[in-house]
Image 1 (cartoon, rainbow, N blue to C red):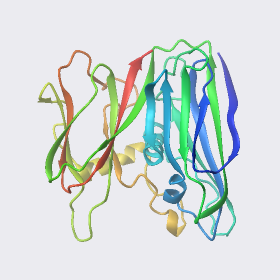
Image 2: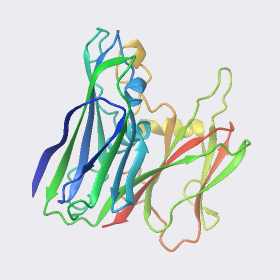
Image 3: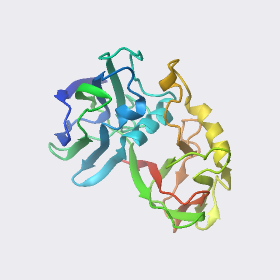
Amino acid sequence: MEFIRSNLILDRTSATEVIERDLPTNPISHLILTLSCCQATDEITLAEALAFINTVEVTRSGVTILSMQSEDLHALNCYLYRQPPIFNHAVTTATATRTLGLIIPFGRKIFDPAECFPATKKGDLTVRINTTVIATSAITGIYSLESVELVGATPGSYLKSTMMTVVAPGATGDNDIELPIGNKIVALQIRRTSGPADTTHVYGVANVRVLVDNKEYGYASARAQCLEADKIFRGCGAKMSMLLQQDVLPILTFWIDYDPTGDGQWLLDTAGKSSVKVRLNMGVNEATYLTVLELVAA
């Protein structure tokens, strides 16, 4: 096999804009998006750096392949690669250069010729990155984007990652969200708006069930605290020693995981089903961000 790694965006100056690029026509394993900036004073936090990238979207002839906010893309990287993305040079020096790297995936593993985005015609596949100009916590920001093509690959499937905003339901209690039908679900990534308030154990999403044709499937009942405990299997946790970096994101995200072993034997196949939904028991009346990870036949 042969791969090609190449620049799509090279050191573009930070601005409030939507950057759009056509992607290569060969099968694509993944894209690499980086934000490089200099600290304005002492230490830019991960949350502040992610805020300069609003959304990332990949479409094929208008059909969404990947769409999510930067916080959810960061969490997706944690899920797939079992460790937080690189946010290097964690020092408190003013004007020190920091670089945040995010992977935009088209398969559960990188460099997998069996699971990547298939070959396309020129102009069919497009990436759009919505950014905000670097300000306040950082200076002199630049963005870069690279692609990794797998020449001659004939994938059987690719990873589709789409985020939906679930509005506050208006009350606490059960909130049913209909899920897409037809593909195999790898995981549901759930990001809450807030964490438990002081002196309480109440989570925005307190408990989760998955129902297929109105019967519980896999997740008959999963408590928020226990879903937090599951994050150990995805390598989430503090990796840095500096005060502002102690709580590494995703602190508000957990996963309803149908690929815990990474080999596809537990995937939720929705083909032929009449109804597939996730039931979120809301401890707090708040909005929720839900990203559905699906394997789609190429």
